[in-house]
Each structure stands twice: as structure tokens, then as C-alpha cells.
Amino acid sequence: MYQILTDSECDLPLATLRDSGVDAIYFHTKIGDQDLVNDLGESYDINDFYQQIQAGAMPTTTQVNVGEYFEFFKKYVEANTPIVYVGFSGGLSGSISSANQAKEMLLESYPQADIRIVDTLAASGGEGQMVLAAIRLQKSGASLDEMVTWFDKNKLRLQQWFTVDNLNYLYHGGRISRTSAALGTLLKVKPILDVDTNGKLRMVSKTRTRKRSLIELADKIVAAMQSDKEQPVIITTSGDYDAAKVVKEHIIKQISQADVQIYPIGMTISSHTGFGCVAAFAMGAEPRD
Image 1 (tube, one colour):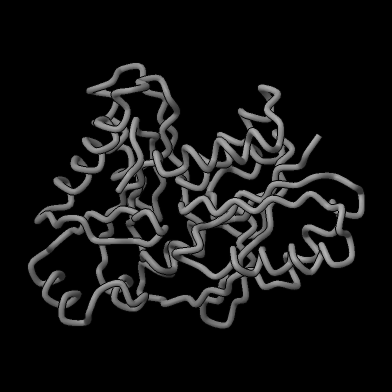
Image 2 (tube, helix red, strand yellow; image 1 turned 60 degrees about the horizontal axis):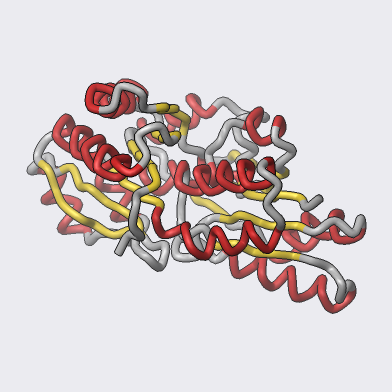
């Protein structure tokens, strides 16, 4: 049997990972004089964190380094357990590169080790969808080769849609210019973003009201679900649960049998979106472009 591994940026509940035997490595965040470990809420209250960023705090984040990945993988390698790491998009973080470097270092000492690294090209609940897919595949009896092949063929079918309520965090993260942030804030612009085929965020469109942006997210997920209306849908938010519920309700209004779960966005991604980000994730019939 092989071991499924992931990281804290999947934004799945810690109980879900533990119940399925999935192990996770944690990113790091600093806010004010606090150094925090993004351990999926085990050691902190995410709502306290949201209150701080809603008040204007600008946290800094640190990706997982090579040494941390080395130790994370090593305990399984030493036990002769094959592993598959289902990780945060390489287009948004260098962490997947660190994971691959740790793999190469381990193979120098353990040449027979079976270590697979999957760049999900996804973030937040999108990465979470990929982890859930890995869990389902393992439970169905899929081999490690079959799982990796599935990811190669299907991960770009994942549809990932985001909107934010505060453009300043996109500016500080280098996603938009200072002028665009200032003008967009003045005009109350609410952007719609997705993740491209390289796993990077991109601006797709702009709306003039918060409600319109939420409905647009829901409509895009409904369009993706047409090939499988009973598939699980994940919505994540950095604190605006009422807005997340608007998206959920609009999806269910159109697809009554939809299985929609709402989860909090963790500290790392929230640090770059600000308070009030809402994101939605579902598998489409065709790869995104």
C-alpha cells in the first residue's frame, strides 16, 4: 500500500485527512510578531486570523523548504512505503520545486524508493479536490501508477474560480498594479479570477457588484457540472461565510442534487487574498485552457 501525502494548502478539514490516512506538511505564516504554522486549524483559530486581515494586517508567508520535505518524505522512505505527494500549484509557490529537490536527495541514499510528486496546478479547494480524488482512487484499488496516470489525464479538467473583496491584497501579491487596485476600489470592481494551465492566477473578467461576482462563480461551476451533476463541489472562503452560502444556494437552485461543501481558506492563501475571498471548484468535462 502506498501513502498519500499533501500540504496545508489543500484547505480540507484536518479530520478528513486523518480519517483517510493522509499526512500533510504545513506552510508557515507571520502576522505581526506571531509566527504561525498553517496546521489546518489545530493550533490556531482561523477566524481570529480573518479578523486581523480584515482590520488591514498584511501577513507574510513562507513556503515549505527542501529540508522540511526531506524529513517529511524520509520517514516513509525508510519504512519502504511508496509515497505520492499531491501538492500546491507550482505556478503559485516554489514548494513543489523544493519537494522535487528533496526527492532527488533521498533517491541518492535510497535508490529503490518510490516517490511520486504531483503538481496539482491548483490551490485551496482545487488542491483539495485533487486530494479527494487520490483518496477515492486508492480506496477503489488503483495502483500508484494508475493514480499518477489519472492525474496526468484529468487534473486540468478541474475548474477553479475566485473572487476577492479587497484589491489591495492582489496588489501587494504582485497580481495587479497599484493603479488598478486604486481605480478598482474606487469603482467597486470585483474581479473574477481562475487558474491557468501553468497553475497561475489570472484575471478573467470584472463585475461591478459583489452579488454579481458571486452569482458568476456559481454559474461557472454549474456549467462545469453538466457532465456530472452529482460530483462533490468545494467552496472556500477567507471569512465571508454568508457570501459562500450565496454561491452554494445559487448552485443548488440550479442543480438540486449538488453536493456542496464550504471550508475556510487557510492562512497562506488568505494572506494573499485578504478577507472575503470566495472560491469554487468542480470538475469539468474538458480541460481548462
